[in-house]
Image (cartoon, rainbow, N blue to C red; front, side, top):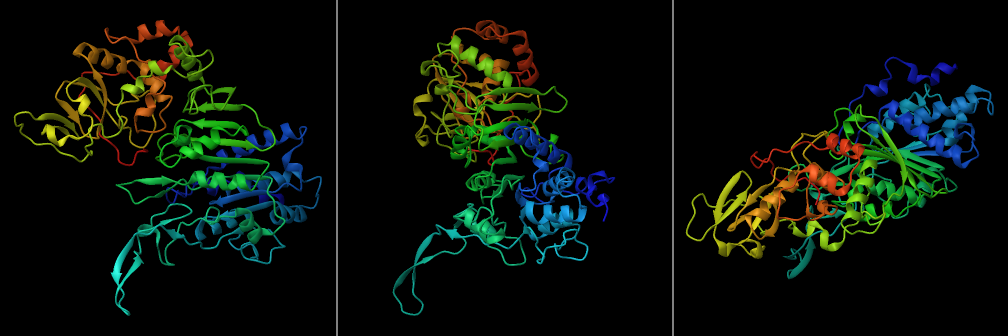
Length: 569
């Protein structure tokens, strides 16, 4: 055996740079990116172990609990092979030790488990004749896969006649439940053996430590957990609606109490949203999150993958709590790095841009907030003018009449306008006879990619007394006059205003809460960015940052966006 066996990265091309993603839950990590994560891991280990190299320790154990291509395990093995050369001089013995004692994985499907074994052992079977690990007696080796089934719960019930005894009985209706572990829709995921169940073993258990003991041995403990978990499952909703599941993998990994935990996950958790609010609170309150590498565009890491909101890599260090080092990446822009609290004083969300922290503090303090806090006084919060979803109780699919009858209201709806009788409106009646401003609930369409600069919100427009909207739009008001409405409209067109919205906006969905950092103003005048920059004393660098992030807005454009049903609530 020669060292070349473990020089796969040197091949041209590396096979793991060539494989295509199989689905939204099987996004393969590029080898170069996996190695960047390992570099961060190496640094964190050295800082807490007196400069020692993690790759020179024959006792450190690694787990990828959702391995796909096997890239993390392969690159870890390559580094250990070099790092342990002095401790275990014989190459064959060294490799066998690493593969049997230090490196472990759990496949997410049968196919990816075999792919991972091929990457790590050079054979899809760990005990095959071509395997470079010589001590395994099982085909799986240390990369386990077993089909797991969902556990259906909360099925709908019905009263039916008992076909054998007569009389009524209560029965559960098959296909109406959801998995108690991951929330999968039974109608979609109750599958035969010929299809993957997408029930991932790592999260389909109430006792992950017992599960790991059953798979790898009762005395097994992992020092490092690393990987790229499945991101979502279709939840049976409208169109491409999907529920996030990556947070479940993070929570399970923490229960195993590793020294270090690092994963690639979507960045939407920064502000919460669909199924993520509890996870966000848990992460933001965890002082052991020490590194966040934030990528504004997922395509910069996973070419061709449509994932709005970007992705992030985090490093969690069990034994070294403290501030978090935040680095922002976007295309060819210069990266910015700052060490700061994960949760700024007065914030209920992670502030994504390092430059945004100083801007928020200046705005809050100028409006009477506490020094050092990003929170606005309650009386100055613009979000109190913004309606909840369905401001007038009408779905986005609602269509008004084509012709108006006496006393009808004008309705702004998906695709244009219509008319509706006043007596059909049950919600938002206090807004009907006032001026207001409407803006789309969905952000401007940019396909499946995040681009900067962009508009942040759809083009707002004024609605007069006697107007309402469907769920397609949010309503801002009530406003006392057309002058006030025009002032609000000019304010929303300002780049600073829209940056403040962005700092609380995790996805294309623009709900009331994204206006949390936006202050109210004097609505007797039209506003410009120059007015706002001067009012808040922003520096030239801060202004340049805003101008690079936010695109100018043409208020003469037609309403340009409709609601996206797949957006987060």
